Image 1 (tube, rainbow, N blue to C red):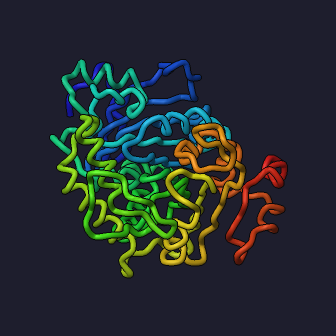
Image 2: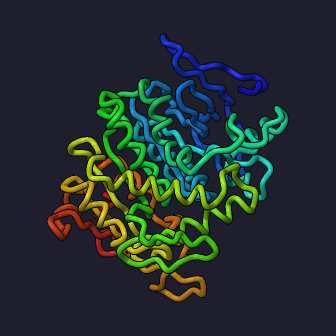
Length: 367
């Protein structure tokens, strides 16, 4: 690993993991500083990149791992600003992952990396992108929660994992692989929470990568992922393989998750959070995963508040709603930690799994 100015090596009794660490004192883009944070990267068996936020006491045994979407951007920083403070108050450390292969000099590096301090330090050390390999793959990006568990999991007694958008696919991929490879570590996973998840089975065989395909209510077309990957590569924001190769990787990941022999640990709580007017998906895009893999352990939370379209019209689909930026962070925190008000659960429908979040019950959520 390249040298890092003022680096500190974190070790424990068995030196199986070593992290380069940078204490973060910065305030980004006029945002508020959140907790005690540090940039960490490295690991001997798997690479992790991102920010680790610790509680004021600094001795928490509970960790939340958050993996964002792809190509990624402001949603990660928004989660850090709005939700991480609540999780810290509840006594949980939080690791917010960044994608390996992120180019440090791209036009979107500031929001994708989310740390001017890390970008500056990396460039001074001659780094082109996050990570020591020449290029990474969508498989690497999809294993961020896996890597975080390998590198951080032994320090904690319980771990809750949260995925947003494409990060939800990676969250599930990681959780299933951990269950297969390390059941003791898997037992530490308390829950999985998906926000606006790209977790429906991929549809279609051609893998169109020259334009967005229509996203059907029952699933996600392969072409959608192809377009996103192609854009990220051609814009120079990631060091990845060819769009065609990476599209095949995404298809393999989806197939792996839906393989009948690959399963989550038994009785794993799975919470699926969707917005009715999401510009990318409807809540129904998660139901196939729920039926196939989460079985009796899922709860589907649907925001029925009316979103505004790009022209200001109420109640229409809007891609911005997909990011959950305007969603109440108090409610998101309660869902992540499983603190669902009993009066809300009592009103759930469809076998007590379909839970609505709307103006009629917002006061119940806030109690």
